[in-house]
Image (cartoon, rainbow, N blue to C red; front, side, top):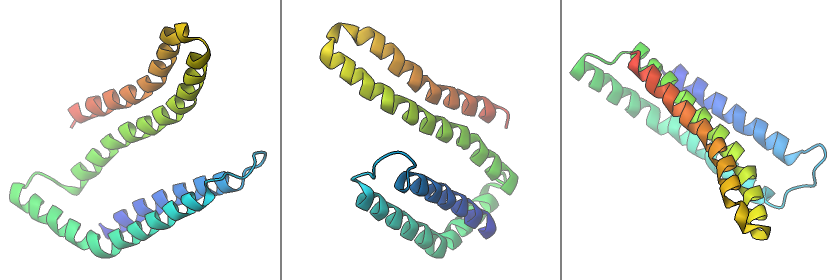
Length: 146
């Protein structure tokens, strides 16, 4: 089970590193002013991941094994299924954040000039936020299959 925790942590770190590389070395944009904060956050995240693997993995696995022994219902397959059910909600929330960020900024810019466009901008923000609701609905549907 340790290999699964290590593999998932490696995937998260690889995703963060890819984002950092693309953010810190843009092809056609000027360098961002928030680079030190971004590097500090990445360093803190990497330290937290190392501490999680070093200190928390053994205790978490022991707690899972004790809980499985007490109820006799939770297995590794069920745990992985529950993890797979949560992934669509997380990815949909990330997608909604990516969608709502620029839409919300543009909506505020429009509302600063023409306040009577509030209803139109609210519709666009709601469409972006609907992505997260789709992921939640998919997770609820998948949870019903277990």
